[in-house]
Length: 409
Image 1: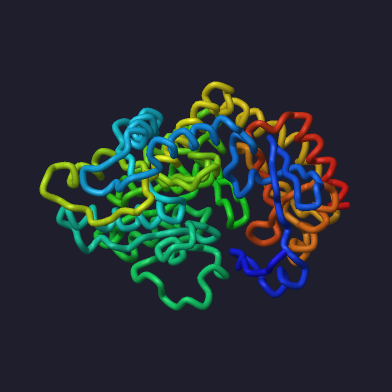
Image 2 (image 1 turned 90 degrees about the vertical axis):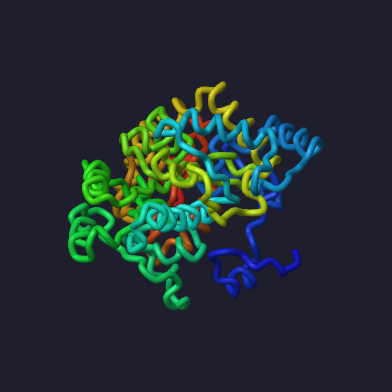
């Protein structure tokens, strides 16, 4: 196969030397490579294929929409009918009532949108000095300028210089670290705090007991916008039978960034949920927010999202995701007894991390997993990411655990 493709997050020297892992098709929780070999998909693509692969209903919905009109500008007063319908549907399941929905092309777009809107909001309400954006160590917020500046993964920031001024970081698991930063810099300078309910790409770390409630209250007490980054966790991934982690933990975010599970990855799309008080200055009249994306609210993507949400509701997949929380803990928890495993982090949603005792072995272990019929990836410092589609059965979770045990042993 020609080697013209430059892969994201890759050592291209290694990819060129060893060749790419080429996926040709998928069905449910399984994928097949270019040689015809089958694998259990442990990661639902890249956290996103919540409904599983090969759902022709979604493909047909997109095809039907593209046949009518693929897309049109969403700037000014323009919209496609399906895009407006999707916005209303998302508002109806939002963790904050009467939220507004701003569509983007993906998760990184959603994060940059929220960062810009946070600063612009404070400008509109007469507090232009509130422009510091705060993230956390270990955090991942996409790879645009704002998201990279907020990143708590050092390697993702190296070699770029200062991408965005007024970006700060606090300890990922210590609410007092956020409070200390606010007291040191002054609440009158801090615009927003970005928080993943579960640290995702940074290694899959669950929040300490009470942490989310505490940082949310700190933000309320000091008039700092709370932005829940649910690009990974949204649409059931850790909702506990709810659509969003923000609902499960009653976070009432000022903004919430989403993507991935919105369309289950069938078509790129993201959305920012914006609470009424943040939207109000821009809806009062006379204010232009000069921000948007050519493909934000793409009609074909909106059709995919509508079909995806239909499937989740009709098949009760939020409940299935809640069931996976228990299944993964039961089946994968015992892997912690292996010498090659330091710990297994599980117990909150359809997400698990199998932390390797030697993080340097992660690249080789991904290869071993493939040898045993598992397609996986590493996150953070040597954590094997497990985030299956919600359609993975209890028996398939057991099969996944058995294949992983063989590879890890």
